[in-house]
Image (tube, rainbow, N blue to C red; front, side):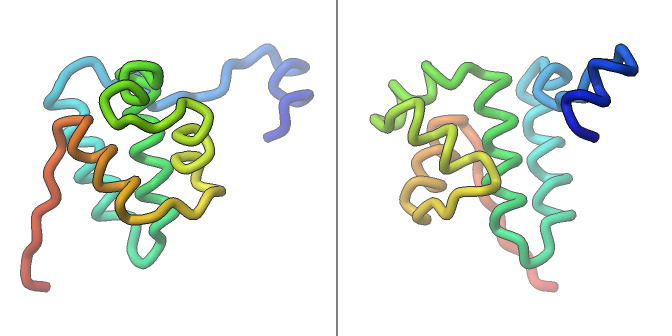
Length: 102
C-alpha cells in the first residue's frame, strides 16, 4: 500500500519495531525471521534493521563504528551489505547465530 492510500484511509503502517520491547521479543523475532528467510539474505538484513530501529540506530552506529546512514542503507533490505557488516550488527545487538542440521 502506498503512502497516499495510507493517508487517505487514515491508517498507520504496521512497524514491527514498535513491538520489540525486550530481549526475549528481539530474540524470538530474529529467530522467526531466520526461519522465514529461506535463501533471502535481504530478508535477514531487513529484520536486523527492524531490531536496530527498535533499539536505536544512533546507538548501533556508535557500537559498530559504522555510520547511521550506512546502517540504514545496509539494513533496508535494498542494500547488499558485506557479511562483516552483518556480523558487527549482530554482535552489537547482542544476538547470536546458531547452526543446526537440517
